[in-house]
Length: 304
Length: 187
Image 1 (cartoon, chains in turn blue, yellow):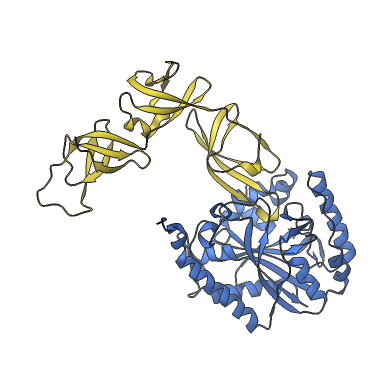
Image 2 (tube, chains in turn red, orange):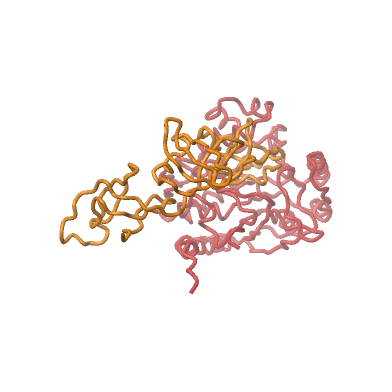
């Protein structure tokens, strides 16, 4: 008789908790009049993001996020929608990344990203039973309101150089990863907002502040859980940004990518909206005190 | 050549002209920006451990390493001396490089020696080795409860936990991968 797969059997506690989390997420959104939707995984083109590589599949690709189809639903008059789905990003693997992972996205019409900050507070409050999360030995109080920091202030607080210096010296990622992220969300969840416009290709520029986009990221215990923005609704501006991103992709030697024309066409009808993507695997890591993403999924590519 | 997408734990590559092994690996994409490949690297000659972070697009030269079948001969002031079983060429490896492995060497033992050019930088031991217990507390008669372990020392100076019935002078088998007691060897 073959040896039982003990490593898989040992995941049962976390996989049971994962199922509970998914059930509660659905109940949370349904109770707030959100419609659960499913959009195709296999699509002709993703948004041409310079640092996200789609997994090719035939002549098309697997979606890196359901974002474009979700926004077409907004444009067609669906006002509150959410989706739980798998997404694929080529060659992303590490303790917090899998090339195939589970995403929760939700979108609201007629509101900006501040409403999504509240949604995050409410959702985490529902999921963490006693308003506390213990993750890798640290206790995080998740009673709202969460801490809010501009990206610029986070660099002032934690980094040896300013945000602008880091960008000018082409080391934003290194500094953010090493000095800033580990400090975020350690006593309370932290919302980092006011990203430079150059770091938010699908987001609305902040009203009265042309240098910043209405984008935020949610951190708990140093883990980036979610990325949100007030959606850009101007098709011409969106096309300009996509072209610039596509140019950057090509000059980095990446395969040419067709623009998502139906999305660009219908964007004109999209009401002011905001949307957010939350990594379910990382959320389960946080709520089950797992230090590696492999512990919270049934199988990883190397197990298959 | 390796690219950043080949980086993973255990990969051996050349950095600043010396062979290194990736002892720890992680990936991140802070702020949805460029991907970072975060490596904990061990210099395979000096044993030095340090962190280095790479971005997509960097490339790496594989470390030119060769494994050779050798026999352990003896220890002298240069370190532990091994002989190639085909060419009879001798190679000495320092105590520091061998680390814990030195405790499991028995005269004439066949091992695989990892070579970087003419430098021996590590060995692969057989999975099991028999070593004689040189120091252990006497067995208290009647103490047969499983899990009642006690400290013991074997001929190479290695300390480990053994069951209470193992006494001085007894030959025991040790798993070299975990360093743990396996069984008592009948002579």
